[in-house]
Amino acid sequence: MSLVIYLIPLIALLLGFDAVVGERERGSLDLLLALPITRLELLLGKYLGLAAALTLSTLAGFGLVALLLFQQYSWAGLFHYVGFMVSSVLLGLAFLSLAVLMSVIARERTRASGLAIALWFFFVLVFDLLLLGGLVATGGSYGGDAFAYMLLLNPADVFRILNVFSLEDVRTLYGLASIVPPALAKPWLMGSVMLAWIVVPLALARWRFKS
Image (cartoon, rainbow, N blue to C red; front, side):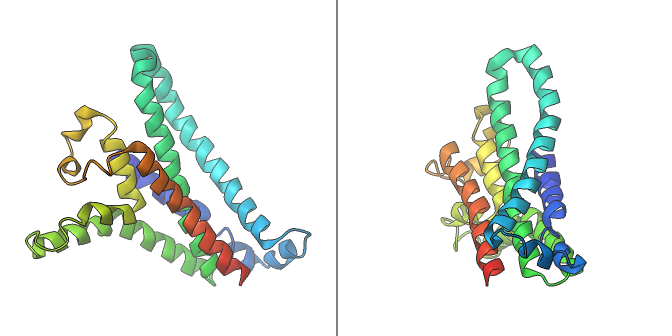
């Protein structure tokens, strides 16, 4: 799970940061817009193509391990692993949406790549440190109750919560079990939040690309 949090967001951001700005710099964006397609269709086509590549590569990598697990644990042990695979794909798609948004906003390819790396550092490395620093600085007297809900502002933390609470044995290994309230420890709820992280950046990208 720790490797997925570090690698899949980075791969997704590097995969999609030049989806639009790259076409703009190469001068092919005007040609694509001259075709009988809408800007929404162009944006979705870009995203869905990259999403398919990311999803297939992720499932192929995890699928090899799934075969080994099936031989040893049969379907009972494979059930939770399949859920882990699906959540990993959703994590990648969420960061791919953020990458496409950055690609629409940025005017230069180099700036888009810088924004993508900055997003990776913020969500994967800095975000949790800021929350923990705030709790330590205030002695837990400020924002302690809202800490769990602040984690929903980070797709990497949503992925972590989704998988930590999937197995009883895993909960005891992470401090999140003592922080996240039972109301949030529901796979369908965390899955919905992850879907929101996919849809909202795409909606913002569509609005910005249209204007």
